[in-house]
Amino acid sequence: MLKQLRKTVIYLVLIPLMPMLSQEATCNGLLPFEEKEGLLTIEMESGVINDNRWKIGTETETINGENRDTNYLYWSGSESFNSLSNAPIVYNVKINNPGTYRFAWRMKVGLGISKGEHNDAWLKIDAEDFYGVKNGAKVYPKPYCNSSDDLTCAAGTSTDNFIKAFGNTLDWVFVTNTNDHVAHRVFVTFNEAKEYTITVDARSSNLFIDKMVLRKNGISDSSAFDLDNEASSCYEALSVDAQKIKEIKIFPNPTKAKLALANLPLNSNLIISNAYGAVLKKLTTSNASETIDMTNFPNGIYFISSTDRDVHFFKKIIKYE
Image (cartoon, rainbow, N blue to C red; front, side, top):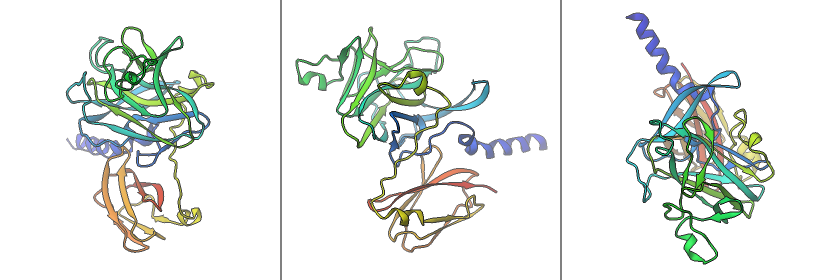
């Protein structure tokens, strides 16, 4: 009995540390993911998730001869094939190299053996041009496609400028299509170097999505979909002197209990979140130095950040006993 108890305790302690052992995003959705050299790689669980019907699962895969833990996102609520589920996940992205990008997420059907079920979600990218394409023919979501006679609507359901984004596979594959019966790959054109948003909403349950990738035209799929690629880092748009931001101190880190912060701007709004992006604590600073008690936090990886207009920083914290 004692041996079983020890095993249980060890297992519970290790759960928060799993992201450290697998490919995880270095951001948690509070700051935009930054495109570099025509590539964006974003873990799906790293967006801003505000609905607990979105769940995170873990599966062990053998990748390049190595066992790795893959964290994936899936919807556990009711299916919504004709309208949005109103459970959006938002991913902010910073584009540095404008142009046309292919969009694909690494996914698989997570329930049953039918490739045509549990295989899609709603997807919208707020950019200058968002569409599906096959052999040069573009299709667009509704109602945008009805705004001009020159545009063709995607076959199947679309709504509020979200497309039905699907992939018919029982194994992990990078694929995202739209347009029923004649599948079209999904593309997006960014005309400017600036911030954009990607929004995912629930359509079918048990679509397992590991990560999404946007790769600019000219970059091969094999390079973009390499599972050894690191997740994109955060873009920190500093609107105050960068040297002052660098001087913000957080110690001790790793910490067993209390975390001290020094050189903070006054009246900063700080957020502590876990590795999955869930906000655990919020506070507003009243002094240049603050102390945060993390005694009751489980062992694991956390992030502290501020997204105030004048202060942007994002740092990792490790809690241990």
